Each structure stands twice: as C-alpha cells, then as structure tokens.
Length: 303
Ligand code: HEM
Image 1 (cartoon, rainbow, N blue to C red):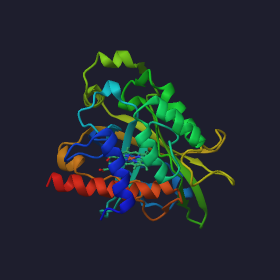
Image 2 (tube, protein in one colour):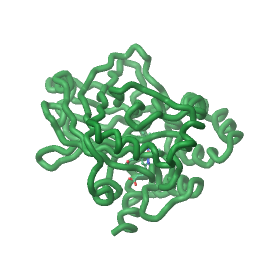
Image 3 (cartoon, rainbow, N blue to C red):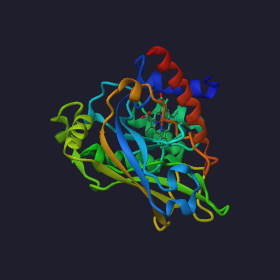
C-alpha cells in the first residue's frame, strides 16, 4: 500500500514531469538485459550476502533514462539509470538501483518535493540552491554535463548513492557505497552529436553491441571511515577512501520478454538480503514508499 509520503513524492514528479499510464513514474524508458555476476573473493570478507559468496549468479539489468516520458529522446537524457537484480538459486532476489550521478540533489524527502517543483526553471533552481546549499554539488555536477551525454549505456559509471551496511563473517560492520564502473571506460559525446542519432540509440546500440559479445561492469564498494556521512546522499566521501572490487557483472543479451521480464519487474534499492542492511538515509527509506506507489499503479494499469 502506498503511504502518504509516497503518494506526495510521486504526485510531485507527475505534476511537473507528467505521467504515462502503465509506465514507471520516473525512469519510464528502459530496457532489460540478461547478465551474470561473479563476486571477487574479497567481497565475502566484508559481507555474508549470498550473491557475494562464490557465484556466478544470474542477474537482470535495466538501463533507463530518468525522464517520466517513456518516449523521451535519448539526446535529452539528463541522468541515466542502471538497476541490477541478482537472482539467487533459492529463488530470492536482491537489487542495486544506481544512477549516473555520484551524489544526489536532496537529503530530506520533503526537499525532494520542493526541488522537483523548482526544476521547472533555472531561476527557481538557483533560488532553491540558495535555500539548500547541500544541493549545490549535485546541481553543479548535473549542470556541467548539460552539453555532454554518455556515449553509450556501457561506457558510463553508475553510483548507488546511499550507504548500506555490509555485515561481515566475523561480525564486522562496514558502511559501503556502490559504484558500477564500465570495463570499456567512461566516454561522453557532445549532445549535438547525440541529437543526430536515433531517439532510442542508447538501448538500440547496446542490443546491437551485444551481438558481438558481452559488455561488463566492475562492481566496486567504497568503504566509509569514522566520521563519514552514512545518512546523507548529498555528501560525497573523501576521494581517498578505500575502494574494494566486489565483483564483475557481464551483460550478455537483451531480455526476451521486455514486458513481463522488464517493464513489469520491480527494482527497489531497499530490497536487501542477509548480510546487507539499509543505512539510516531518509531518502533511501522514502524511495521505498514512492516506488511502491508507482509500482502498484503501473502493475494495475498493465494487468
Ligand atoms: C526521494 C528521492 C527519489 C524519488 C521520489 C524517486 C522516485 C522514483 C520512482 C517513483 C521510480 C519508479 C519506480 C517504479 O515504478 O518501479 C523511480 C525509479 C528509479 N529511480 Fe528513483 N527516486 C528517488 C531517488 C533516486 C535515487 C537517489 C536514485 C539513484 C541512486 C534513483 C534511481 C532510480 C532508478 C535507476 C530508477 C529506475 C529503476 C528501474 O529500472 O526499475 N532514484 N524513482
């Protein structure tokens, strides 16, 4: 059941950005791909989660554009999404839901509503940033990317943004943040070059690229140290923080059934598993509430 906060978060998105029946309230345009995840031996030292104990584990990846418009042109993409679902042999699942920005715009759910309304004009964003200086980092980061766009889905880095608690085999607790780094390296193209391409080039080119063989991402975790903010998605951790390679995600082919195997699937960042816990980040908790409103709605509309 959707909560009041969840309803209000989704209403803010829908009123400013529109909504299309049957589609996600945000990240409406996407495509899923089959993948295989192989953890590194190092990952099991930090978490007892089942997908980190040896593998390989099948996975599904959904790449998306953050827009609420399922027919948005790729050349207009501001933020890209990468959601990963690990499919365990006993039928359980756990997700990572990441974007192509390393920090988020807001640290309080109520601010998300205010910020979403402000995004209709640059002047209002500026006024918002004066009231909420913690948002400036993400606003500037997104602004710097305005003239440029990921060259492809598989040449962009994606970030889990929130901290999660990894519970180790000997009772150790480590706060981590996820990164999915492309093995092909990060590459961007000028937005005007993207405008000359097919409006769906990001998904189309990935599907075509996979005919020649898989593409891969490295799953890394950054480890917090004492004093690092573990409940604030607007604050990055110092660049010097240790980065551990947790595994390799190999993407092999487009999912055959894009309706039931993708558009009707649910990816939720709070969908953790033994050995992993959500941090006290309030945006992370609010996401669960907003996602369930959108999920309930779109599943009803497509049943
Ligand atoms: C309060 C803040 C946020 C709100 C209200 C919000 C809202 C939403 C909603 C309503 C959906 C559609 C859910 C569905 O129908 O399945 C969605 C999808 C998505 N969001 Fe968020 N979001 C927030 C923050 C974030 C953050 C911080 C990230 C990245 C770390 C993120 C990444 C994504 C991605 C990648 C998807 C698409 C998932 C998929 O492919 O199924 N969102 N968001």
